[in-house]
Length: 116
Image (cartoon, rainbow, N blue to C red):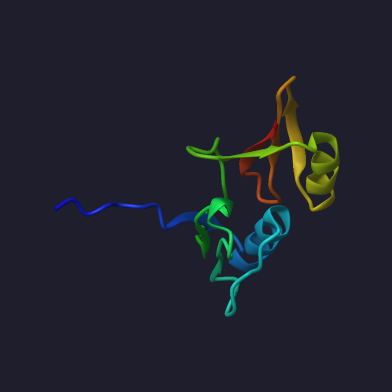
């Protein structure tokens, strides 16, 4: 009998878990789960399983100092409008290419927004 393994969640180290969860919840149009604090917070995918795994944010003592070892790739068919919205939420543009833009969240963690 084969027991399947599935991706439940992604853990995200941060300086302030509640602030990071608020940013990513707004970006992904999700809700921060009850009980969020500066120590620990999470956002669940909600009713749509295609919206991805649970994101969990945990405070760590050190700030980010180097390039991410992993980052999110987000795709949209409304690229220009979504890029403006994401920057309005507090992201900063790091680099722009024809098919995607690399951004950073408020703590400097990189992610890509891809033209869909």
